[in-house]
Image 1 (cartoon, helix red, strand yellow):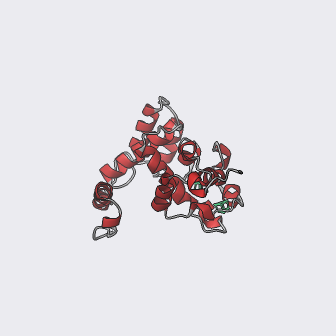
Image 2 (image 1 turned 30 degrees about the horizontal axis):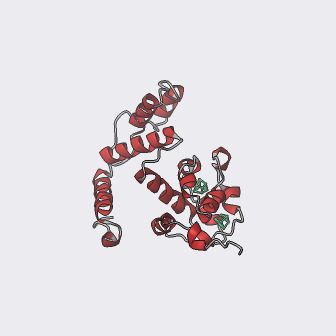
Image 3 (image 1 turned 90 degrees about the vertical axis):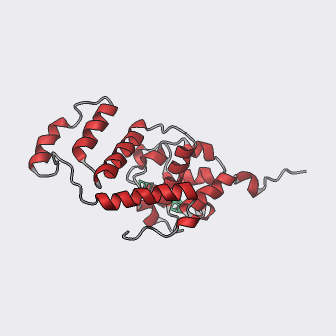
Length: 198
Ligand code: SF4
Ligand code: SF4
């Protein structure tokens, strides 16, 4: 008798989690490739964005979670706006990054995770990114101590690089970080209402 693979065999529970986190229906993608054709980062990715969706459709979730692609995605949403099936691929990438972090899967792009970590820590501390600290910590963390140093004076005299942090938005950032912590500890369903002032 011919062996028939049932759809459920190809769709482990984690696919449902990805769909819930991203709010997207993975199977609605019909692989036209328009997302990948417009993605500004595609040339540097190990697989193009449409193939990430294809891997998920086929149940290769572990493989997808280990891709460089999910970490290189800049969440620019070009793919999202181009998709004829209205698949928000940027949201899917975001869900995959979150799951990879939760599962303790190390990003093959260490510099990207380091950058994200430092970026968020400065936003948390000052309410907005403090470029001077970000560059210093990132260069130290990647052992590229003098990377982009020659650009600093030009940026400084153009007013793009500040010597001291700007605390505008600190209160708002604190509220956002507290909300995220609360949602993480009790689940998104019970916390659909954001704090007042956001
Ligand atoms: S553009 Fe949309 S339908 Fe086409 S491959 Fe990308 S995600 Fe799938
Ligand atoms: S959101 Fe990510 S995958 Fe989509 S076009 Fe932008 S970089 Fe590429």
